[in-house]
Image 1 (tube, one colour):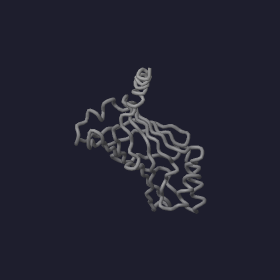
Image 2 (cartoon, helix red, strand yellow; image 1 turned 180 degrees about the vertical axis):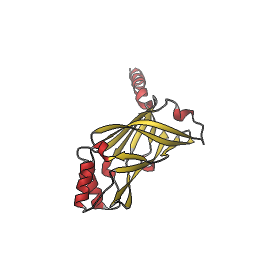
Image 3 (cartoon, helix red, strand yellow; image 1 turned 135 degrees about the horizontal axis):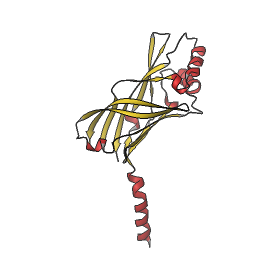
Image 4 (cartoon, one colour; image 1 turned 60 degrees about the vertical axis):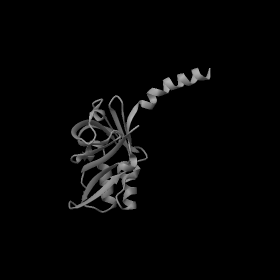
Length: 192
C-alpha cells in the first residue's frame, strides 16, 4: 500500500517539480534605473531581491520587490517606497512574457543571441505592454545570463506615478525630477 501511495505522489508531483525549468538567481540579478533631478543631476538606483522563472512551456515571470529600492540614501529609499511606489498597496513589479518554448535549451553553450521580447509590465496597479531588447548568453547547460541591450524607458504617467514624483519634488524642494526613466537589468538564470 505504501508503495502505491508513493508512486501516486510521484506521478502527481512530477509536473510541479518540472514546471519551472529555469529560475532567476536572485543574488546574481539586478534591475537598475537612473533618475534626473534639477534637469542636470543624474543618479543611479537599483532594485534587488528579484525572483522569477521560465516554465517548460516558455512562460516567463519576474517579480521585483519595490521595498528593495536602493538609492544610496536611506531617507530617499523610504520616500521612494512610500511616496512614489506606495509599497503598502503595490509591493512589487511583475513582468511576464511568453518565450519560444525551447529558446534556452536550443542554444549551444558559449553562444549569444539577441532577441526582442514583448512583455507585460504590471506596476502601481497598471499594466502596459513593453518590448525589451535582450542579450542572452548561455554559459553552461545550467546557467544563462540575460541582460538588456539598451535601457527601456519607463514613463511615470503610464503607471500613475506622476503624483508620487510631484510629492518627492515638493518634500525635497526640487525644481524637477524626470518622469521618463531608463531601466536596465542583468538576470542570471539557473536550471533545476
